[in-house]
Amino acid sequence: MSEIKLTKAQTRVLDVIQQSIRDEGRPPTRAEIADALGFRSINAAESHLRALERRGAIRLQGGASRGIQCLVPLDDEDHDEPGLPVIGKVAAGVPIDSVAHIEKVVPVRSELFSPAPDYLLRVQGDSMIDIGIFDGDLLAVRKSDTARHGDVVVARVNGEVTVKRLDRSPKGVRLLAENQNYEPIVIAPDSEFFIEGHAVGVIRTAI
Image (cartoon, rainbow, N blue to C red; front, side):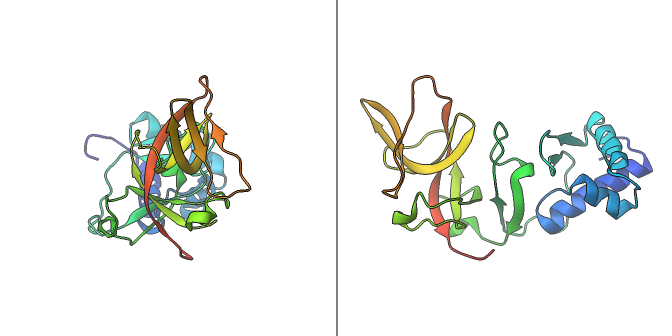
């Protein structure tokens, strides 16, 4: 932080952001910043955030209440403690592992899975229940832009993120649900489609 010159007020805001990331595994909202520092309105918090962004201390992501990415290393003695980020609802157009999507960091060692995952994705819906992946489960995901036929993948189709089984054939690409109530998703030639990662395990928990 020695290369970034901040005012005392900006430093206090940055401290609140870093503390929230350390304690909660996610950045604070504008309202939480205002409350923590006694600001009369969230506009004051927003003003300081914009100043921090101009100085290169943070990056703001529009459309997300917690869309604050801290670019300054955390002054944290416990940064080596094991843990995986839990990714919640993913906004269209925003990288899946963005800080804005992190609900919390949980003390799960990546070595429990093979290969090691990069994050845990909170499953939404029942489209994969026939292979034991239920609504609310945490899917251990390894980041990758490639996958093999038959892999359970996290894919983005026209901006929406989905968990399905990858089906590749000479006829094209489909994403298959593991629930007979769902039809396959056929990837059209003009679709925006890419792989975000593949599943390496699942955790059923009330985390």
